[in-house]
Image (cartoon, rainbow, N blue to C red; front, side, top):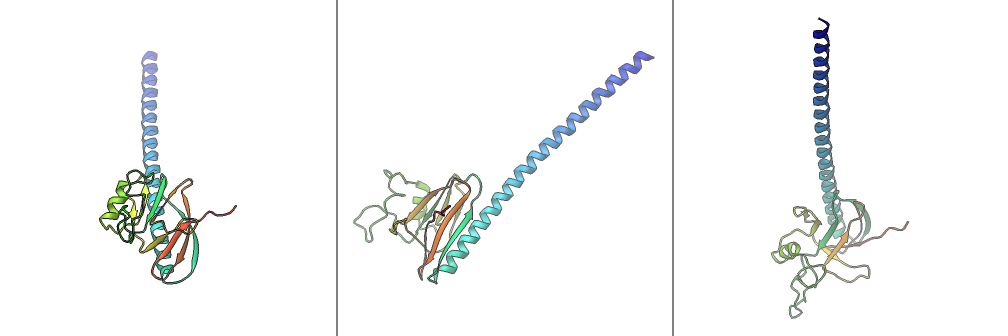
Length: 185
């Protein structure tokens, strides 16, 4: 009888280990899925916050002559954000009046981007684009884009390093000027 007891104990221990392993794997899979969903929700919240903050700031400043500097969190994984003045002519040839803005629609230019160029040429109302996400595009109303020297660019692209962008927005009466802002310190 002692042989049967030992065999029963060994079988019982094996079943306990199998059951413990099953529970461990189940908890691990559930935890991984929960963390993934949490990250998706965080990115969705960041996108809604970004859209709301930029849209409300652009719209409230457009008719005023005020200046506001904003810090905006972007969804994780975003590598670059581009703003496009959709009122500008994206066609490059200089014989158009007004002449086109070189860059986004010029295949030989370093900023060439077919997705934004097609949207611009097709009068799609979206004027903010994100990389690498193809589906992340928003429209914030009329914007004018200037570089650090105050030159009208037609578009501005900014690389994202820490999921944050810094922008200086200024009301122009009929639109809002957007330019990069580099905080000191």
